[in-house]
Length: 99
Image (cartoon, rainbow, N blue to C red):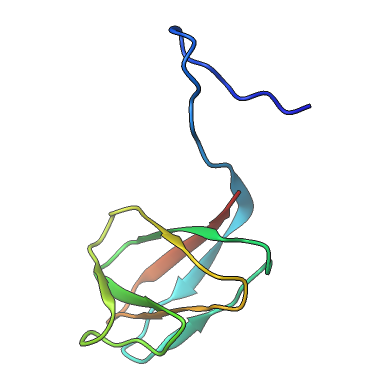
């Protein structure tokens, strides 16, 4: 049986667990689709070492994507058949599937 961790006051600690390894995606000034590892993943953590844009389920560019500043951690929800698309001038986007 899985037990949920509790803090010193007995309150449940809600947390996500990373499914390793993290996927490194090279950014380029063209749309790039991120490969999915598992169809059962519904939460993904994104962080980039440079400013970029991302979009779920459709091609992405800086006019239609969600802005992701460098170094900011973003958690997003995705459906079992959806993909993540990214766009950026250069650098890397790190994608970690969560459970």
